Length: 259
Image (cartoon, rainbow, N blue to C red):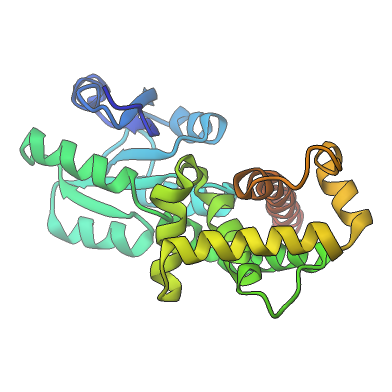
């Protein structure tokens, strides 16, 4: 059996029906479900990778929920929206859903749509924060002293920008992360991996030592050597995610104070 890749939450008028449906998948693990006003708080608390969102919920506007998740979550879920009419599906896609399907679609089609949506590289709800993610990623590469001339620096920035809001992409660097970056930069996954490795090696040899010690701590060890690409990106992603979360919290607070 394949290892489940995505943690799923179900917000639907018939949650048990969809729990049974998603329970058939080897790519999804249901971590919660509900119908009503409490759904928003559950999603914010559980931070699922994938959200199956019914267009009709008790006491809650599904389309407005999409906007709230985009504004409040550093790593929003990928969303499959279920509606009863095509016009609502189109509106949901405009509001940030990654995919949409008719509520009464065949179950095998819904399951396939859920799995495909869950594996989307970057959720649409993360798009409004792309500039901030890019600036944070660039900040860390500059701080570490990664040479501008190295292609690996650009690839590291792209990787951080993705991993901050799509941690599941990091579940397989060779299978998902490197191919994604390669497709964006018109190169090969092997070239991406090699360029990042070169950038990490260069940073360990001639980068900002104080920043390396501050950010990586135990990894600065002559016997142990430099970290692997995965270790390097994983640690930087942790810092970047916390910084983005703090930024979002600060903006939300200011909005409330001015509201």
